[in-house]
Image 1: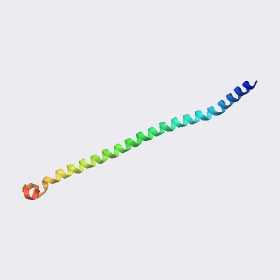
Image 2 (image 1 turned 60 degrees about the vertical axis):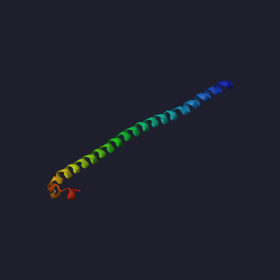
Image 3 (image 1 turned 90 degrees about the vertical axis):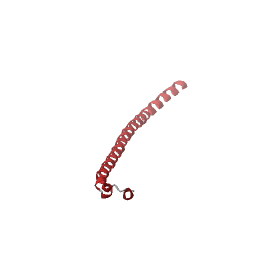
Image 4 (image 1 turned 45 degrees about the horizontal axis):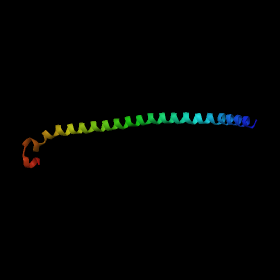
Length: 83
């Protein structure tokens, strides 16, 4: 009789604890998935910014290389002036 009461009590406790535990686990898994998606989006954003900065650097370097031959110091090819 006493053993049956403990079995019923144990079953009730398990039924009481199981739904909140399942909800906690589900929420944790979902938050982890969302964090992974956010991390991927952030990594892509940073990569795009880095790519844009590199494109600007290349464009500025090309402009400098186009401008250098137009300078009189370069056209005269005087080593003392160029250095």
